[in-house]
Image (cartoon, rainbow over all chains, first blue to last red; front, side):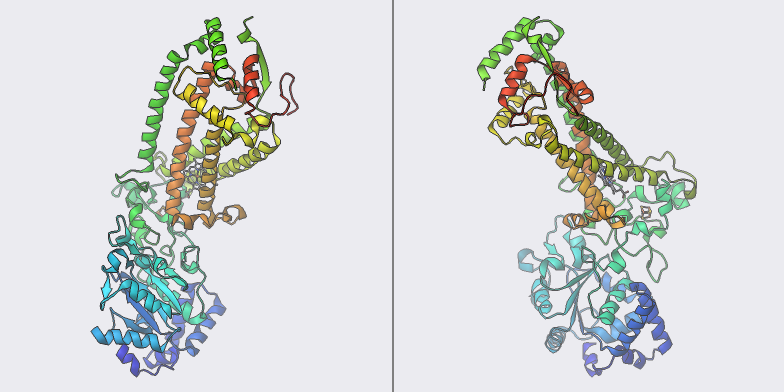
Length: 385
Length: 249
Ligand code: HEM
Ligand code: SF4
């Protein structure tokens, strides 16, 4: 594909290329309005998107794959809008991506080097997957180089970095305990470059497209939350946009997956829904062109756009395991053990008190007053300060 | 009368301290119970249509409101540790002086190991107790910080928004919630031991600890007071003793 790209006139604007591929202007405008709505821009912003795509040249993109399952790419390709996959990804933007490019072997590596040299400081680096650091990074090597080496090399002259999915943002399943390959998110491997964390396992296709178009149209990093995720898509919890929320507030909960309450569509909080602590757009944009999302299908949110969600399980329990304990233990188990220990201690102490402090207690009831007095006085002599 | 029963009454806990104690207790119990329900909602009212009820929302509302009360009350107590009498003073809370450290050791021997050494008859708290309350204060701060951090993203108000920096430290909001929940257990355990020890001291020493947090007065034998005051521990450096007649606050 990148070879094919060489034959395309690079000076063409995105609009030119879209039209050249047989898309009508009407369809193009429809796309702009739709993606504008996804990004959350207002009416005037859509104009800006149209203008940008009409006048701007494509941004060169290098898309690297490390420790991942390619579900991010898959998600992207399944975007409901043909222009996303066909134009943004397939024909226009990708200069290098192992999964989709026609070239392979030395040709592919050459394409990477060429793109880096030609668009130094201009290209956008997209990374799918985490970077293993254990054993000098041997757990993920491409063309004889480690993922870490490649990431650092390509990142050096990148304009910005998009970390696709939970792998690149926080390590996902391969970083789950005990993380044998020491898988690291991109933010822990590369410093000094703007990194956009597009979270999720995978991220929603429209979210991915939206972030790309935002970069294209506004030539700026979208506003990020304090975990580096674009606010347009990750500023609200699944819980805040969930259509089952009225059931939550009314305390109507599914108790088990085959009960009457599940049939009625009550809230999935008690069967482990992580929606209350998960920031994503599943409740609004939904999946597969707005068809559905897990909660709509009766499955609790597993929190895939949050750090370490694999270790925050069990998925179907309300209370997660408490971190730092090898044996599976929730805060409740630990708390009960601690409280039990305290109760035993207190009981023993109470019993002992009646033996060892007999003098003092007797003193209060008027017995042994003399004895207590002398004991006390003697002690005072010993320890007078 | 035997010398050991020559009691004197001492006004130890001023009104603000007593108010603090009970508001704090009420807030913590409310937060603990509502927090528990937030984690383990009972299936009791688990039928019907969503529009007919809002009880879980109300439980959360009570939790958040009590959170504000807990914080406000705590801030007042901090102020009072500078403005109040020597038993309320901030100086007591960390055992930093030699005398305090010696008392810590003494309390551990006498009250925990139950050796028959000389008992510590503190007018305020003893040095170990003060330190425990410092730790509880820290726990309060932890619950307030994590609690407001949990509120921050969905809150329009400035106070929770002051805590937006917290969640990134934990990595995710789920982690904040897990630790916030564990904090509840620490309060449960604290409360259990705290109440036991109040019974213990009241029973063994007979200085009226239990009623002191209602009325403010403790009752102690004069020679014990003298010995205790000589250590200068409560609210060092010693000001004039507040005894006898009822003080202003
Ligand atoms: C004694 C102090 C406190 C205790 C014992 C306590 C206890 C709890 C517990 C057990 C939970 C449930 C956690 C879970 O299920 O994951 C919770 C949730 C929460 N607490 Fe607290 N809490 C305390 C103080 C506070 C304070 C000061 C605030 C701030 C106003 C606060 C705000 C919250 C919030 C926002 C939640 C999340 C509830 C939800 O989103 O449904 N808490 N608390
Ligand atoms: S199903 Fe999950 S996200 Fe939806 S209201 Fe219940 S807890 Fe919240």
